[in-house]
Every structure is written in structure tokens, then in C-alpha cells.
Length: 251
Length: 315
Image (spheres, rainbow over the protein chains, first blue to last red):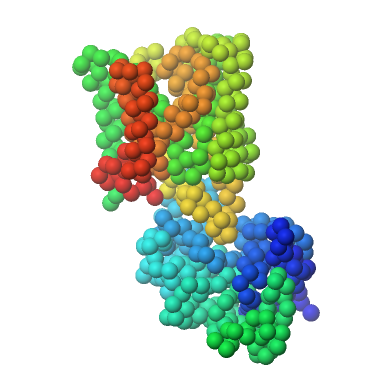
């Protein structure tokens, strides 16, 4: 059997007395969309941060694309094809939307020790950035300062910046957080177009979004994965219903 | 549009500076030549600080260290009979760049208040080293036997020639600085200030770019120091004193952080105020202080931001 694209074994992270990640195992095959769900404080964002390299785990291994990346910092993982979006929108607010995406392109277009030619005049940075902006539906908003975009548009920009790094694996941390129904529906539409083209690990609260997108679901509670399986199996799992889905399903 | 206006304003300012020697000659006040040369030298130092402070968000409180190293790089060779500017000035830039490399490699691993304190500590350390080395003048400093020799008709002993050499260096710095800020490198530096975690997430190893900017700023600061030693024809460790770092920082903040013209304006405002006010009272800083507070409170873009067309930053 071929090795999964992402393989996590025995991942552990502790903040003082709080065990945020408690021996997590996770396999994600190439092309798969895996959702990680769980109540607030289950350790989902901490897991994403360790996968992206923003946080160093206390124990455990992370293998990505056949290499051990546990000790690699975030920029190195990004260059290997791992991209993340942030739960709390993280963009360059003073820069235009197009500039934001062009920066993500620039990060993967050779070094940036170039001191003379204006970056905005480099078609090799601007054209791919424009294409990605179109792809996420912000084609007409390229010149707008990112900080003044509507919330939903900023979330789309988050995705655009991740996509512009040409990732094989997308780590999406609550992509529809804080969105209205319309915006949320548009984001699901967008994410649907990414399924299959990219391998996706999706952390999300919104169950409609999760069931619309995920091939497989892992349920986290108190830093542990208590169940993994196909959406239907997870929906029926009594332990999961008790721990998490119960109130959401009845609501 | 705004960019073109800024470029025009910059050209106008440089033209005004170019006219100063004529005006000083007409009103028979050679002192102005000296004053504005000093302003331009500190403008070079302030612009170099602003590259890391204003554009890069690295609040270095030890920029005077490079000023001092640059001054020593002129005075020590001169002491041994080496007067060529072609030796002294590159040496000033290389040594201060090297010092910035060492200081940056350590201090850039910290951030916030720790970064401020470490850069301050390094500069003070160099200040005390300067004080303690008697052969190089110790606490008292030492006279510079003669100004750097550029060769040919460029005799810095001639106040006008010296003036225009400094003006040319400032003009080149502003031109090159503008290109660097718009180029890939400057874009990275500005984006790191805006959101460093995001930069790392999209694949930039930010430390190497911050360190490179730190070294560039240090090297240019060293050049300003070399010019300052020529200006005063004197070397003193007090060029490295932390209050001097504070002065340069005030020039940047007063003039407008994150712009190239701002620090030039700030240096002019600071030194002109010092000049005018200190004629009235030795406590001239008691007037400068509240002025700075007003600028910080009510004019975030500094004096440059108050000018029409100057409000938007050079991005």
C-alpha cells in the first residue's frame, strides 16, 4: 500500500497543565478531503498549527509527501507544498488584494533578494495572482486594500493566498467562520471546486459544510481523535453523538 | 498619481537643498552651509534607520552605533596616514554592516521591548568600548587631521564641494531606496511588518530578509558616520551614545515613518529647531518634547504626512 500524503503519529502538545493534543494519529491520502470536527477547545486549531509548522509538537511524528517534516519550520513546509488558511483572518491589510496574492506567488518564485525591479511590474508574479483571484471570485476586487474588503471577501482572500503557493495539501481552519448564509454557501461552492484537485484537511464547526465536503471525518474531543470514518458512519456513531453532534443535530 | 506627486516633492526638496549654498553665499552666512550639510548627513542616517524602523517595523534603538563605527573607520585610518575616502568610506560601510550582522543575528530572534533593549545594549556596549580605548582618543575623542580625500577636484576641504558630495549621496540613497522599497526585497520587508506569521505561512523565511535589511541599514548608517566625522573633523565616542540613537529615531518619527522623504524632513526640522531654540535656551528639548508628543498624537504620518499629497505612504 502506498504511504498516505500526510501521516501523523502520536502527536502530543501540552500547554502547562492543558494537554491540547493527546496522541493524535491521522492519515490523509492524496486527493482526499478530511474534516476534523470537535467542540470548542478540542484542540483542532492546535493540531492545524502543528501540521503547518507554526507550533512545534512535544512528541510524535509528522510525515508529508514521504518525508519527515516534524522539525521543519512553517516556511520550509510551505515550500514542500503545504498551505494553511487561518481561522482568524490573517492578511496584509495595508496591501491590495492582488498584492496579497502576488506575495504568496513571490514566496514560491525564487528568492526575493532583488533590489531594483518593482515587484508590481513583474508579470510572473501578477498574472498568476490575478488568475487565483479570479478563481476565488475576487477578480474585480484586486485593487482594493485588503483591510477594507468585506469579511467574506477577506475569507476568500485567505483561500486565494493559500492556493497561490500551489499547494498539494491545504489546511483550512474554519473557512466559513463568521460568515453569513450567502457568503458561506459561496465559500462551500469554492471549496467544492478544490476537492480532488488538492488534498484538504478541513477544520470546521458548521456541520452542513463538513457533510457537504468531507470524504472522511475525524472527531476530536479533549485533544484526542475519538472516531474516524465516512460522514454517514460518523453521523450514526453513538459516542460522537453524545460527545459532540447531539445538540447540533437536534438544533 | 500620489507616487508622482511624492517624486516631485522629493525633487523639489533636493533642488532647494542644492540652492542652499547660493543662498548662504548671497546673505553672507556660510554657517547655513555647515548647518544644512549636517542636516543632510543626519538625513542619511535617519533614512537608513527608517528602512528597518518605518518599513520593516524593527524598532532598533541602537542606530548610533553604526554612526560611531563609521566615524572610527575614518579617524583611525587617518591617524595612520590613510586619508583616501575610497578606503575609509567602504571600510565604514563594511564594518558597520558587519556589526549590524552580528547585532541583528542575535537581536532579531527577539521582538518587541526585548528587541529595543538588546539593540540599545549593543550600542551602549560599543560606546563604552570607544570610551575605554585611549590610543583612539578615549572619552575625549580625537581631532581628524584632515578630511577624507576623494581625489581630483573633489576636495572636501572646500565647504561647497563637501556640501554637494553629501547632497549627491543623499540623492542617490533616496533614488536607490525608492527602488529597493518597491522591489521584491522591499515588498517582503513591508509585508513582514504588516503580518509576519502570514509571511512565514506562505513560505518566506523572514529572518534572513529582516537581517539583510538590518545590515543594509547599518552599512548606510556607517556611511553617515564617516561623513559626520568629516563634518565635525572630530571623532568622539558620544556619536554612539544612546541619546544620539534617540535623536535619529525622533527625526524619523517626527518626519514620518515608512517614507523616504519623512526622515529627511524630520532631520531638517529637528536640527533647525535645535539651532533656533538653543539660541534662546539651553533647555530647548523641553520645547521639542511636547512637539514630538503632538506629532505622535495628532499626526501619525509625521510632518511629511501633514503635507498635501504626503499622507499616503510609499507603498
